Amino acid sequence: MRAIGYFRPKERTGYVEAFKEAFLDYCDLNVHQPVETFFDYINGGKDDSPSFRAMVEYMRRSTSGYLVVVPDATHLGSDLESVARAVVELEALGAKVTCDDDDMPDPLQNSFQKLAVKGVSRTRSSRIQTSMRRRAMQGLGLGRPPYGYRIGSKGTLEVVPEEVPVVELIFRLRTREELGVRLIARHLNERGIPTRRGGKWNMVTIRDILRNSTYIGTYRRFGMSVPKSHEAIISPQVFRAAQEVTRARRPIGRVVNAQPFLLSGLLVCGYCDNKMMGVTRRQSWKRKDGRRGRGVYRYYQCQTRNNQSLCGYHTWRAARLEGAAMGQLKHVLRYREMEERLDPEAAKSRRDEVKAAFDARVQNAERRFLQSMKQAAMGKLTTERLGEYLVDLDAVRDAAKNADRPLDVGKTLEDWDSLEIGDQQRFLNEHVSRIVVKDDSVEVAV
Image (cartoon, rainbow, N blue to C red):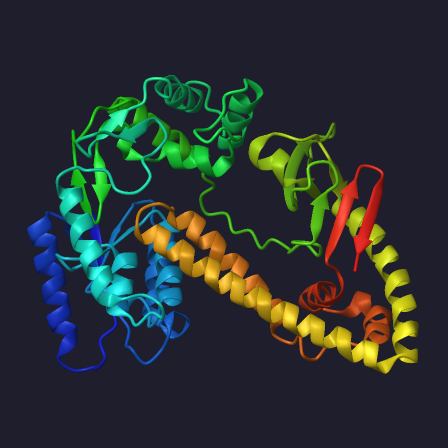
């Protein structure tokens, strides 16, 4: 495999050549092709590491997949969060990240061992890692087995006969019909085929199945690959065909600067009580005179519909829904502002409640991230899902940043159209708990 070395030594003298030599030895031992090395220094986080950014750009311009080798997790970041961000970003580019550490090559597990983590015992983490690595070398299942398999009495993966046809159907829909993951989830749900837990299929679950090499009988964990460790459900040819369909559908070289949606995180579908999400669609067409027309359409859609193809087709054009919600909110807030002017204590009490609510949101988001990090390190969560927890964490922190200095209601509403969208969203998070949307109504709860 084509390998890239990345290093963040503590000092600028002596260590660079030593790290480079160790990287070349690692590639020689594991039969990888070294193609490039990048160096930064420990006196700065990832955002202040120009060579890390140069490495990301190098991989983004290439169509090849890479193995990124680091001595240990501390070269990716100084805390769990920065390590997670680095791993998520690199793997989103199709790279695999590993540590040059025979005992602990997995960068997420390595981070628990190498970095001080509140509430996590390094000794216990090391014991767990050693035990898990030993089991992985023997081809024994770790964590929750993927759909189609169970852990048998001997600890190895065994096929679940009634789930095998579903796995085969998913790969057939991908390779023969070339359906996208959303349409595959919709097909399964419409046929009444439940997940293992009796729930509905969604895009993430389908995507995880399609790229999991477990289905060809190969067990991968901690940088190791154990072929023929268990019975295969899918042939290698079909699996490769599925990966080729994925690569063919992935846009190459297109940079999209998506405008954020004003009401993100606040909208709730009035029919299924799930969140509504912002969707951008770009379309082009050919006019009668031969010229091409292009349009960008933004709207909010029920997330259950989008991810699982359930619920109804409940959508609102973004501008129309935002206008309806803001019209109702302005009326409610101006009335409440008049009440608070007559009762200053009530206004102070509400500000304290807002500040406490934001602090609680941040703590909950940080706790959810740490839990997701542990699950990802144990192989129970993909890095893609880990990245979703990081996005949520960033959004909550941004909203809470100035919660102790609430924006003036009257002035904010008066200057609304000239405000940056970040300030608009901060204001909405201060004053809106949820917005329930139906096809013919919008209800703002403050």
